[in-house]
Length: 286
Image 1 (cartoon, rainbow, N blue to C red):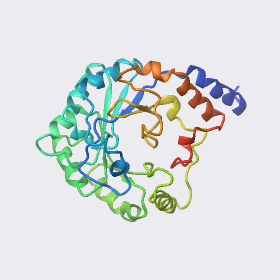
Image 2: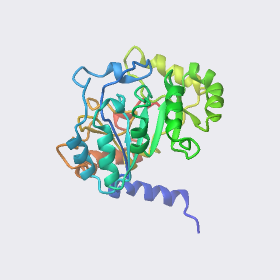
Image 3: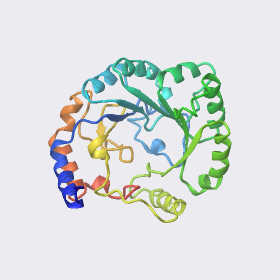
């Protein structure tokens, strides 16, 4: 007999007690970036966080604390390829049997490093900008099957301006065998900042006024986490500011201990009770 919605809810409410360690984490290799996109929080991060790289030893410390890990995603408020040790980190991840994914603006992709990038990352996602098509062509010249294999995609941020050109971009990339997807803008400015409401309205307009509800249904507290280049463990990529919320530092405390800590468990419990931590209020997908 199929489980009823009520029984499924009871199992979900118990989940906060036994949430297993994640199989995927998003790690921020650096806060350095060569772009200042208007929809990104990069230019709003504190000066104390700017221009920092995650060290190789810190990266290994994170992996040591997550024995269940299957995939590492390199992303954050910086361009991952700006960290000179990011490819070495990928090698370490592969030696541990992990998959690696790169989310990049494509600005640092060149004919000189294309082989290393294709070899180091199992999956590559390029956020659309003026450098995207040249970067795609360079990667495809190195390995023509990247797009058809599903290893290379392009994502277009869901602003009104981007959505107007989305069909053309998708058509252009489809001819190259590369899939182009539309993603919802998540990294809004903190509530109360002058740009927050403007960006919120922009995304609502782009989505036709419909934003998928995530409260009480968000998978992040139970299956993934975002770790800053300083090692701070935050709940997700939409709420990655460690000054607003951090469950601990994965360089100083094993990740498994942070994941099973009382603050993190309470955070999950509040989610399932629809009694949300204030950091989740105003979530882009609320």
